[in-house]
Image 1: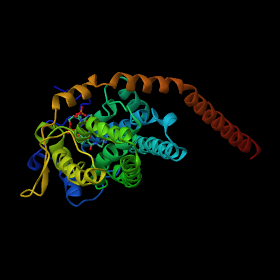
Image 2: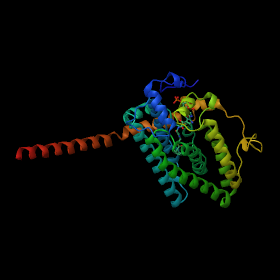
Image 3: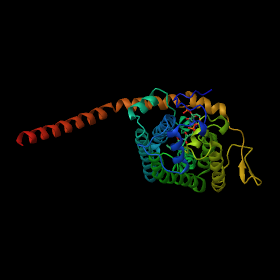
Image 4: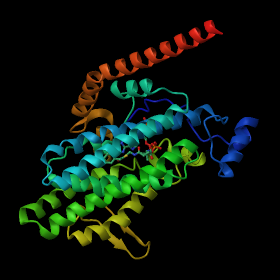
Length: 338
Ligand code: FAQ
């Protein structure tokens, strides 16, 4: 199966009766919905779980720029090109806020990047699928950002303060991304040629199931959910948010005049939700183990761009050292005069 390569030390949810005084006091803070801040005492496994999740989230935002960047030079109009460039810049910013939030937990950006570049840390499975047509850019905005928002809205209430606060701005920007993606698809469906309409349907056919996989395995196959929910890192299980995404997306699909590739999808009057067909979990686990269509390419490009940027980091360090020396000389001259 998929090994948990970043060991957080969580094997099972600890019973309150087995907790020491620090852990019990921590749980009272969680119960009271007080935010946990960087200087607060926290169980080591809580810290590690957050570093795992926040860094994976940051890596997803950064790797997620690649499938979109693929279409920057081929956007059909100047307006679409500007929208796409702005969206990609936003995703980069999200990655940077999230790395900063993770750094407040005592890890370093260099360590997190090393974990990504050596294949130890994960990033969202969805970014291992290719963007084959311009319609995929609309579908990424509508479905991928749409799925990301459903998850991230609940993360605005996550128990760790810096993560929760980063999510507020990220959600506002993701909401713009989702709308631009939907508007792009709607334009193609309402004003496009038959070939362009077919392109939209083909894109939905390819990205629908991978979008549902973004929410992670089913709750009974999710090793981290129970403890993360007990700590209020996650506020809902993977299945609940997946269902929420489907319920809110299908009416939008109907306005587009498209379908999803799921013959079992139907409205269930009794539950008030859509029933849907079986997800191919073998595909999901293959992708997160590194065997998706684009894993190799995504990681190679990320490492190459990190290496190509070494001179920028070196120059920034040289400049910071120069400024520090200047400041030290100034101080020593001032001391001599005094
Ligand atoms: N892909 O026990 P659980 C975006 C892993 S941002 C890869 O359920 P957990 C913006 C999981 O890490 C999208 N791996 O795990 C954008 C764990 O492995 P580990 C990213 C996955 O953490 C749009 C194992 O499976 N959003 O799209 C996936 O409790 C367009 C067992 O799973 C976030 O990261 C997956 N889909 O719940 C950018 C949100 N699912 O670490 C550019 C924050 C699960 O034990 C363009 N993250 N795994 O080795 C979360 O909410 C959670 O981490 C979940 C998974 C819900 C993703």
